[in-house]
Length: 462
Image 1: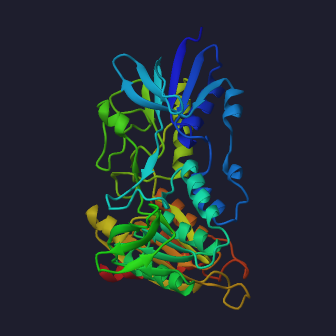
Image 2: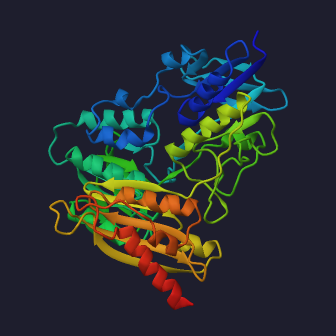
């Protein structure tokens, strides 16, 4: 008999990374591992779903890093289509339901990992449950959307409405354009990509419209209209406008899936995400860990807890959790909020704080925005790019960077991510010894040009 029992709730990035790392440290004679996943797939790249939908990735299974059979071959008892519906913390057990048969059972544990992920925000609107309305968070969601798209494959004049213009919204807009749809993006904010400041979002808005994507700002969706078969036919807004649609994709964002944790009395943050310590152990609970899109993490720049759902974080959380469960030691110190995306040929990146984030954190700052090119201006592949930088008054500490531009723009944000993590000033960023050759950068890299302008702004502000 195994000396300890580990139960993992959730079979994607954080959960299965934790199970795999724990198995590396402890064999089946020491640790019995049981994992429950409510969907049909495990260990997949949710971030790759828009590229599968758009045809850049040939097939769904290309997104799967490890199958249930591969996990089971490593002595992890992975049970698919099984949802955990109750946590009995005093009794050290979870109640599960087989989603195909309806059978329920209790499973005991000595150690518990909650990796329940996030779910797409679904506004309470008339018609939101109509056929053809899709959220896209899991591979199951992606498959349902693909099934809908394939039913009308080859039909002329197909129209899609994307509700929301965050990362998922703009990526799905691109995917639907690639599939031949006429695409409209409706969102409530002043500009798309609320993860950017509005002045940078305006660049995204203009580029999307140039690409043939109708992007409507300040549009509050009020209703989804259906035909006599119960399928979506149009989306209406508070302004009285009506946008015909054969398919609707919700790109409003996600929220942590933490109903189980809430019902069990586990600590939650302002966003509803589970609160953990640096070892990803749930606060106040010695034998419970949590990671992935269901937790809040420390923002190293603002110094507060935030919900930042990204696969990069989830995999790191899993490694930390698995180390702790397996008797080792690791911590997850926090994040600076780095993310990149693209819509057609436009690359979008950000790290650190936006202006409203800095204001909310009580910081005073200056901004610097510059226009440059991705390579030497005379090089044939040169593309325009804009860099915006925030720096703290007096200290000159780098607070955030946003980049919008052509091919070769987005990954430059990694320079800023390292600088933010190291707590560098914009003076120090200017002095960075970055690589240069005409095919890769101007003599002065655009990030350094922005830093130099930020230095001047800090000095002028006293």
